[in-house]
Length: 288
Image 1 (tube, rainbow, N blue to C red):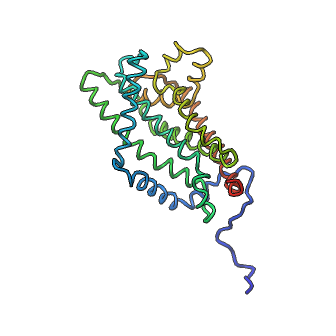
Image 2 (cartoon, rainbow, N blue to C red; image 1 turned 90 degrees about the vertical axis):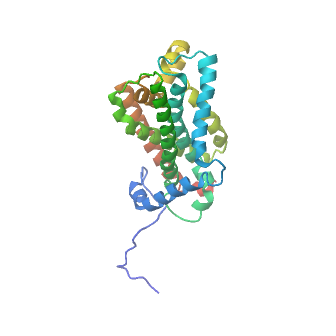
Image 3 (cartoon, rainbow, N blue to C red; image 1 turned 60 degrees about the vertical axis):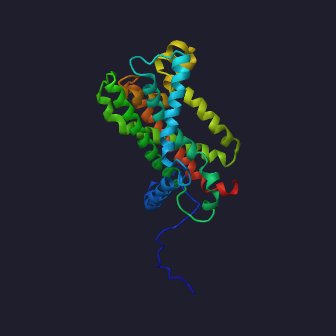
């Protein structure tokens, strides 16, 4: 039976695409699927665990205690007027969201190869859903941090409120864009180089120590070699962590130049990662 020439397809799926294709239009078309994956991630991650969402609370608290004992008590890292535990909890709360976005999206193609080979949808929906669902974990940890902040304020800590707090949503977006962009780049590369899956966990740990999470930037400037201190200062993740502390604790390193620099880097990394990811999704089945 022949098809009339005047029939028009509603959508056409083709492997041929532009050299630079951000594919935002198709992502918006599949927004319902994105919401569905976000709900799935939230429900299933801790569904069969004993403590469930309590892991969201236990991990940053225990890490903050260890950092306080090792870096502040043994290492004599100074945090000024801010209690060391509160200082560490602020940095870990910001770092955890970035880390989760990076590590959980860096294995998108290898983890989801089966479903990708059976049904079509924009593959970027998967890492985007992980980034959005991690906002719940970030929100819970932020509430815990605010609880401890209130406790320390009642026990003598003087909190300085500054107008940079208005930039908080932008800092969250920068964390998401930077983690998602790097995750998509790594995920695209792991389709050919499986060794990257092993290196990601190790590399993320090193990045944490080079991002001023367990110490202030002032300590890096005074104690690190010049080249290492400069890397720490110009590391976009450092700018985010320090900005997060500055907004919530009134202590840390903040400058408009650093803020704009980090925002530009985050957007560039995200767009670059999206372009590479969209190109890789057309050929990854042959290599995974």
